[in-house]
Length: 414
Ligand code: HAM
Image 1 (cartoon, rainbow, N blue to C red):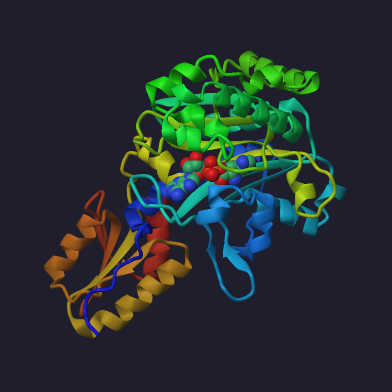
Image 2 (spheres, helix red, strand yellow):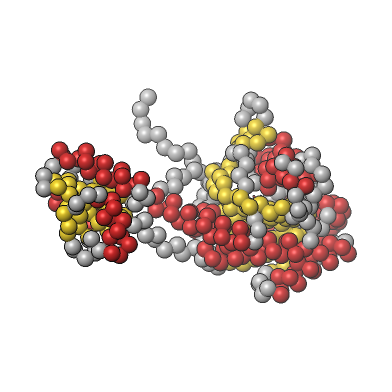
């Protein structure tokens, strides 16, 4: 066997330069979410397949086509994080805690989708879930937090779409009404839409066929069929967002790819992205905990794709961390003491590197300069010379190099 082995299609390596951008996303997420009372949770990378088939829904693309399932034991690499968080909530008796329980995560997820720009088979999501309250203020707070996070990271060209799906019963009777409407205009619809009337009449809203679009302009909308209490809930979410000056479009055709939603749904898109324009989205999932065997528990949350957030943002190159000390030596016979000095410096919490690339002394000094070392120690037959790269001052070390660097770094000079 020969040939170069490559990473699987739809996956990517995170290299050091990208790792620092990602660390920034994580730092902002932690700041924004923990300020609002969210605690970090991490669930396993794989779960019982049934968690997703029951939770996310048998009829969804995610469950039907996109899950990586192991053939032995009934496990699946998690395609999303909401069902796992709900499982953990039940498993750890979190319903006994003061409600709502607010949890956030930043993890990898797996979907067997056709890879394209912004769409991967292994990707990262930052997500937030609030369980145990059906208060519309939770919906509004959750949306505001995602807006704040995206804004703080610098995502551009954002648009927020908002809708309410009502209860599953409302949706069922609406679907029947919409299917009947489509059937009564069948001759004007595209063949694809016509073929899917029974299976998924809602898809007709996404069609770019002019005949279908003309029919859909007068189609009944789910948002006009909400029960009084669902309509009131939605109005309250809107009022709270208005009070906080968050701009959104009510979009009655907003469809989410997961079955567990009820009432509020929302999605942020970015004009900076191509076809995969969804940066993050979510909504309320009041029936999900019960669906996976827990007590009736309302919930609301969202997830945003880390890669898409970064694609939609200007992320200035993050400077590499500063180096306090570079340890050089005049001859390889001083390599061992130089190595020990660097190790001791790191134990003292200094950022320290030692020459290990076999450079000449001149080359070593150049390297120290290149990485921006604050101090350079040169070990030679004359002892150890410590050079302050800022002032140019040089001192022959008496005693400990590390102690001198620590003192010098504090601004006391050498
Ligand atoms: P979702 O809309 O399926 O929702 O995914 C959320 C976000 O994850 C998307 O907006 C997108 O940015 C990113 N994403 C999804 N699939 C991919 C992919 N193949 N490659 C790159 N990024 C992707 C959920 O997953 C729900 N669990 C959100 C939620 C939380 N709802 C309530 N709570």
